[in-house]
Image (cartoon, rainbow, N blue to C red):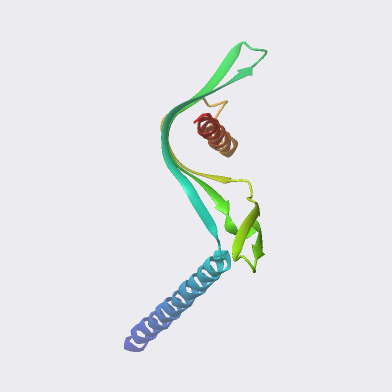
Length: 158
């Protein structure tokens, strides 16, 4: 009886030990892959940020879908609070210039078009959807694109 009990305990120890070391090796593989991804995304950027701004906006999203020849209308809606940071920058690597060695002057020939970057932070409140018209990924993408267009419109007005 003792031999069977020791055999079961020994088997369990070997099994748990194998699982422990196997899980430990799996964690290292995931860490290595993530660090390689970050390393590939870092690049040399020479940009001059000339304007920074912060915008806040409340966006009301509504979408209706007619079902059964418009006898039944299924609605979905959401209230979205948008806090966005906006930067306007120039890429210094794209500036064309001429250097006059004799007079030691620099003449700027052309300045590239400004780059507008929008970093929205969307918080969704009061999300309501019907069974026949649920929220999907395309709805969230549509809301984000609409918010970006609205912010670009506000930036160009100012």
